[in-house]
Image 1 (cartoon, rainbow, N blue to C red):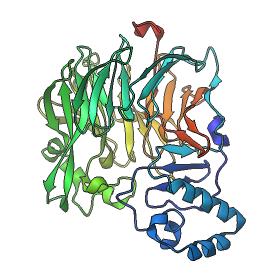
Image 2: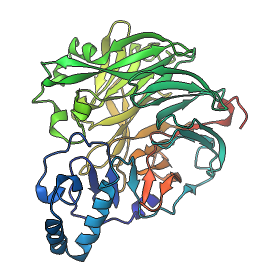
Image 3: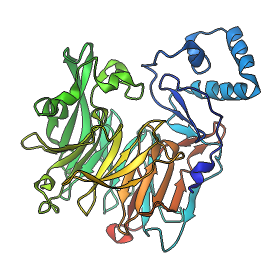
Image 4: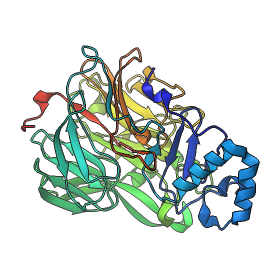
Length: 441
């Protein structure tokens, strides 16, 4: 069993509060997410301890604390302390002394080096299998790196959410920046072009009469960071046979859950796309859907994955309806299957799913288990030895499992604020063989 299952909880019975705080039953994890602009209207008794700004009187809070008893008071104090911090992109972990590699079964874990960044730092690191830092990239004052991609020469292309895309060399010198509302993900092709998710917003009364509707766009950049093209994901879906996925402002699933947070920043986030991957054509003989230049996208709020032809703006494959819940990071494997992190809900827990897009058959899964859950993010990679590297993003843990589900490597983000008990989130960890990287480290 993974060591994550030993997390000590704050107890059960604490409700999710407006998308700001959620106590995950059985895992002992309290997650805090950015949702300050759109707080769900839950029962006042649930909100009182989590939102001091609601103006509840001290007298009422004391009465509530007495009703809860000693255990309830401890829960309430912890939740109030966390909510007073505002937006903290981390997770409460009672085992804050855990740090770095926790499990490493030599001969069963895939050898290599591991690249990752903490969610709110402008820093990335390359680690060996024992957790020793081999190389580090950092740029002071840039802002948290939501996602970073390591290139063979040691340069890094990444994004600061809603601000810019950037490229730095192996010595952290900034080579270029591209200002944009970039978010979540980017992909770099063999010729150096960069494809990144960005956002625009405009009034679209058919979706929301009172707020601008967000449209996710895929922006193509040259190797030098100059914009070459872009296309609208929303428009592509609207003009396809899958337009029914968009529904309307009253029926869209996004409006019925706090997690989708559809009006964050006073905008209607209809798609919330979180992944872009460009195919190199190496699997085109297996199926035309894998043609060179086709893209794998994940518009999260539609609960689907899609492969699109950016030239014709055609959706050539779509899957996930009734099978996925807020998915993240679908990745094409060398075998022509697609791995996807199926986030799920507190009730369903999370799961990694492998689907054959030619037959639409599910051929492998990891989970769900009680201790495996990341509500808002997640990542998965198929390794050369057949194992799968999974980033349980919200909790800041990464682990490698065999096809049978055995954990053979595990890592806990050492970026911990011990006084607050917070372990910082990891958006994604990537493992490379040493031969793939051309720079010295």
